[in-house]
Every structure is written in structure tokens, then in C-alpha cells.
Length: 173
Image (cartoon, rainbow, N blue to C red; front, side):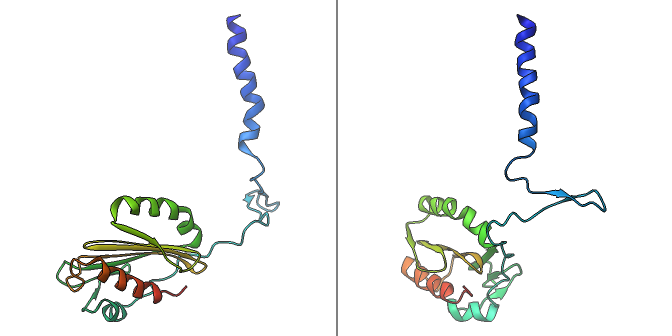
């Protein structure tokens, strides 16, 4: 009886193991010349484009936010005093779409107001007293824009929302 209890799971694992290694999603083959694995397009969705480049320059950001900003690299702009910060993170449409619901849910826990906006395929804008965030997913890619600690915008979420909307209008969607 003990041998049978040990033998049955082992035998069943040999039956199911090949199913785990290749299923309906495995559309690869082998290159006859090299013997290496080759991925084959199964005709699904259109291939995802790479993340778009940074959509702004320091000059353009300065115009929109109404104060001088310095390019700090990686699509990050600061006021040169270590206070005000604007950061734009870009990603592919697929990556942005995959994390959108999670980001929006987190925003409802951090920001005072979270509002859906009519940009791209889906987008939201979130504001609180000294910070704002927007996420846009579009065919051109996805963008996460974060504004924080701008003196000119004061402690008014309206100033942040207005400025963030201007930044969203300037995105190449």
C-alpha cells in the first residue's frame, strides 16, 4: 500500500510533465541549419512598439510649468534648487497597459483626487496638495508624468491639475 501511494504521484507527474513544457502558446520550431530554437509568429496581436523617447526638452517644460527647469537626464527635469521636479517615464503600449489598473488603484490611495481623462486609449490624472501624477496609454506608447514641489503652483491642486493637463496636451499621442 505504501509503495502504491508513492508510485502513483510519480507516474502521474510523467504524464503531465510534457504538457507543462509545451502548450498552445508554444509556437516555436527548430532552425534546420543550426538546430537552434526559432520563435514563430502565431498571428496574434500586432507587435508592441518600443517605449517612445522623452517627449520634452527643458525649454518646453519650462514654458509649460512657468519656471526655469534644467534637464537632469532620463526625462527628468528639476528647478536647479533641488525642490521642484518633473519626471516623465515612458514605456511601450503593452507595458503601460499591463500596469495601468494597478497604477490607477495605487493613485486612489495616495492622491486626493483621481480623474479619468480623455487622452489616448486610457488615462487618468491624480492630484494632491504638492504633487500630481498622470498616466496615459496610447498607440504611441505609455507615459507616466509626475510633478512635485512646484512653488509657482503653490498648495493648490488646481494649479497642479491645470499644469498636468497642459503637459498631457503636449504629449505625442
